[in-house]
Image (tube, rainbow, N blue to C red; front, side, top):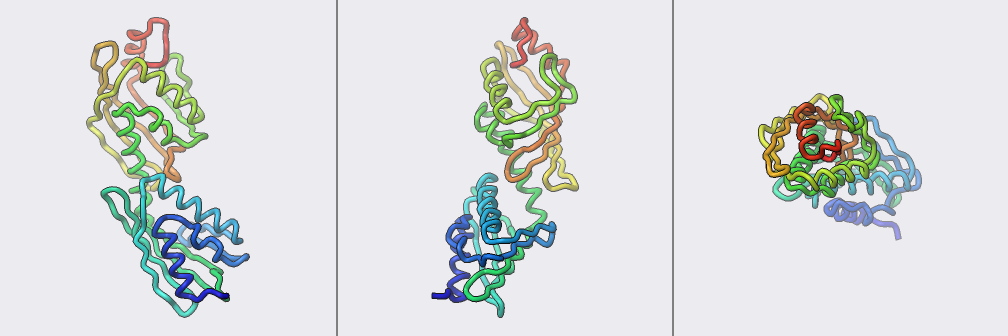
Length: 257
């Protein structure tokens, strides 16, 4: 039996409320089109649209979203969905979508996201990065990076490559460093938004302890964050001070400090 417009709208509302495309994935027509006019994205075909929506749910959960308040309004050709997403302690208007329905199937979905929200999501990943760092949660920290992340250190330490690629290599380094020093707090944190909502510049000091002595490391990072993960970062720090700390911890020249 062909579903009615209100039935389709309700299934979409339920799925979007839980950030899950599964309840309405099979409602798209074989030649359905998903568009994001603000960004020029256009995806054609039921399976491709389903994958895009499923990936969107994964990204939403990755940045800490837990649910969405969804308002649907029927139109003469389909319905409109308005989303306000939320997570622990926050709520933000996310997007408005216009869906066209024909013969009981969704034939087109035009999504208009809140562009300013992208900067907020980027900042939320940085905040989680800083929290994992000062709480010495090294695996959680590594998990904030994309699998194929690239890290550049324009002022590299002796024995540390200028460019590092891959989440697992970072995980190995984080764990090794955690064996010889412990971070205790961050101070003087200043975050600068940029004209690209996926990029931020952060200044901060990390206080820690190593070999019974306190230390402070100052950083500037230029981070690119997409889909809830850090995909690229240029990390600047006081390499002279860091080199002295490494030397004190390991005369053999270990780069773990």
